[in-house]
View (cartoon, rainbow, N blue to C red):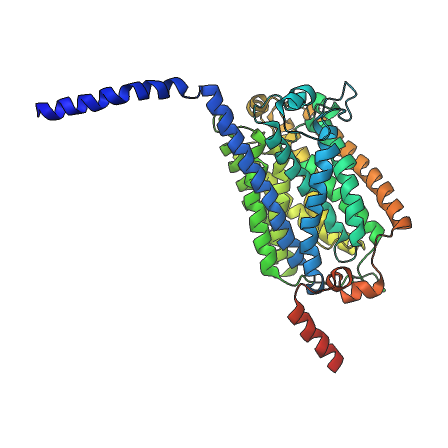
Length: 464
C-alpha cells in the first residue's frame, strides 16, 4: 500500500511542472470567448450559405422540368458573382465608415482580412471581436440570400446575361446601401430602426427587385388567358420544394441566431432560435389551414410559402419579442402571404415563386411588427430602438419602422427599375418566345436537367 502511494506521488511530482506550464499557457477568458464567438459566427455563415441549396431546390421544384437545370445552376453562378462583387466594393459600401454622410461607407474596399483594415475602416463592426474575415463571410451570406430572392422574379424567362449585369450591380450598389442605412451606422441606424437579421435589409430588398423584374419581363407564355384569368403552371417536383424549405428552415438558425455575433452573451442566440422556430411553425399551420378553407383542399405549396413568410417576418423581430408574439407574427405572415399571392395573380402579375408575397409583404409586416411587439427588456438587451406600441412605447418605434420600410422600398424600386430598364433596351431582359417554349435548359445551356424525360416527352410530341 505504501509502495503504491509513493509511486502515485512520484507520478504527480513528475507531471506537476507540466501542469503548471499548461496552466501558464492556458488562454485567458476573453481569448476563449473570442475563439468561441469566431467558431459560432463561422458556423452560422456556413448555415446561411447552405441556404443557397434550399433556394436551388425550392425554385427548381416550383418551376417546370424544362427549366430545372437552369434555375438550379444559376444559383451557383450568381452566388459566385455576388461573392466577388461584395468582396471588392459592396462590403465597403455596407459597413465601411461613412465620414458622417449617413448613406454609404467610403472605406474598406477589397477586403484583405487583416485586423489593421478592420480597425481603420469598419468601426460599425467593432462591437464584436470576431475576425473581419469571418464577419465578411457572414455578411456575404446575407447578401447572397437577398440576391437569390431577387432572381425569383426572373424565373423561366430571364436571359442568362442579365444575371451577370444585375447580379453585380445589386451586390455593389443596391443591397449595400440599405444595409449601411440599418446595420452600418447609417441614418436609419441612428434613428434606432429594429431589423435584427434583415426582414427589410435582406428580404424586402430582394423581393422589391424581384417585383420590378416580374413587371418588366411580363407574364410567362400561357400564364393568362385573353380575359386575363390565370392558368395554373405547377412546379415539376413538389418533393424538391419541400426539401428546399426544410433546408431553408434549418439555415435560418444561422441567419437569425448567428446575428448575435456571439455565443457567449448569456446564450441569447438560443432565445432567438426559439422565437424563430415558433414563428415558422405557426406560419406552416396557419397557411395550410387557410388554404384548406379557401380551396377546399390543403395546399402544400401554400404551406411552404407560409413557413418562409413567417421566417422572413420573424427575422426582424426575433430578438425583440416574446415567444407568444413570435407565434402571432408567424401566423399572420402565413395568412397574409396566402391572400396577397392570390391577389397578385388575379391582378395579372406573374410571380412564379411568389417572391414578393413571401419576402416582400412578409418582410414589411415583420419589420413593422417590432414597432408593435418589441418589449422594453429585450430592446434594452439588444441596445437598439425602443419598446413597441403594445408594450407602452407609443407610436415612436412603429414610426421609425415604417419610415425604414418606405425608404428601403422606394430606393430599391427606383434603382432596380433604372438598371433593369436600361438592360431591357440594350442587352434585353427576356429570352425569345421560341427559347422560352423550348426551355432555358436547352436554349441557354445546350442540355436538359432531365435529358431522358425531356427526350421521351419530345418523342411523344412528335408522334402526335
